[in-house]
Length: 143
Image (cartoon, rainbow, N blue to C red):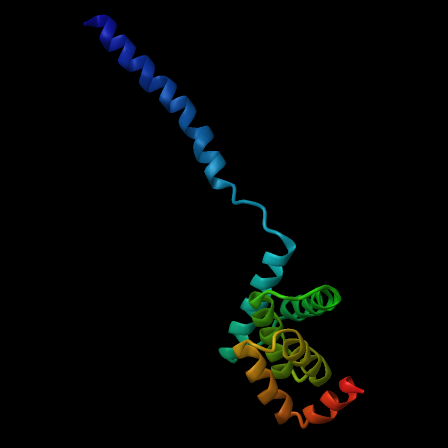
């Protein structure tokens, strides 16, 4: 009986030694990719725009970083519907912040690269509000 009690206590001791290491590993979140961080930042600013919140100076810096990353991304092959949402939301943020040219640019990216998405239809509506003539641009591409 004493041996069994010692064995149980030893097992509990070993188990408690292993537990903090597991808890420490679980506490460390996985590293986020640059794309995940970009998506989160756009989501944060989109919520602020919809909530009519004021932008802090950090938010303005984040917006500049978003613009830089989206410009680099726009130079690559775009195909994912998640990218359509990302560019549309960014365009919406720029529109709300009164950065007209940036908003038009990203609405056009959505329209040109994701024509079959709901975001394309929304982008058309936003571009028309800005007075962008979409028929002229279509004719120029055909020539």
